[in-house]
Image 1: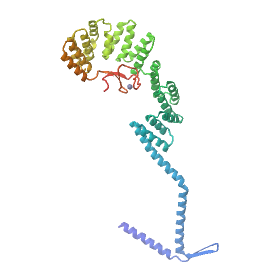
Image 2: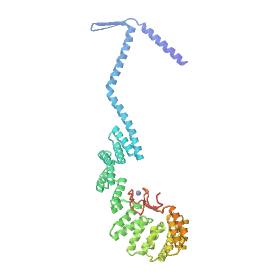
Image 3: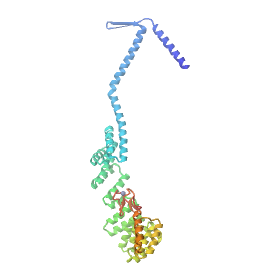
Image 4: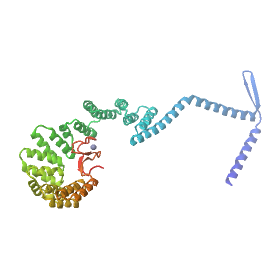
Length: 412
Ligand SMILES: [Zn+2]
């Protein structure tokens, strides 16, 4: 109803205005340079309004044409930014998925669309690296290193490449340059430690490691690497104090003490470590002074009292009992180890040896079959990359992580 009323009012006003316009008296004349035109007032007013509208439209068109290049540039920049953002996202996804060629393609597109910013240069370098194009990656890292804001990232990338090539002198120079850009950063400390460890410079590495597993591992390596017995003993003692449950640290320290004639102290060290973490490698050290098998069994039996019920202790007792000719005792301790939770290949093999000693060929065959199907025995493995190792190392041979090789279930 309100809309109908409004329409009626507007219509009435338009009709009234038209009526008033049509009824205007007089004429309008225009004389320019001898030419003249005259018209009735209503017609002249309508012509004037139409003329103004035409002039306005022409001015708008002209303005649009004049701003066309600038507007085109703005549109193009916006379009490139949007397309560049999409290419950047695709680069990150491909990098995360480990797809080098796809990451490189997307990174180069982002670089073309967004220009050489620290971000696009870094992505191009990382993508080239992932795609196995080390020379191309180095070029991008160098460009990044020359960039005011991205210099640290460029130097860090070049450093990693130098480490991969084992170009230690170049890596050391690059690390110093990176340090001037970002002094005192945690990454630099860890990297200097890693670099020293990779070069076998254990003493420098020790100064950079916090007390703990890393410090212990580096101290064991430094102890093994020094020619001075006194230094070796001091470093091994440091390692053992850092990580008493680490068998290689205990063996290094106790070995040094034994060589120095301090047998009682050496056994005290092993006893303390054994109480913390019974480890098969400690057994050989404990029974070493025993001249024959019964003496070795006696030594071990008297030694392991604090953790005699530990399955590793029972397994060692079983082996030593068998060697001492006590097959019945060996079987008893073997079953105790089994009840204690051990179920790996060592048990089956020892059971086969016991059966052989008892002249039981059928039982020996059964035990060997069980051993073939049983799990691998515990061993050394890197907690950083999971790679299994035959022997303990201060740094992982696979991923070069420091102090990460630990004893436990074998990696599958
Ligand atoms: Zn590793």
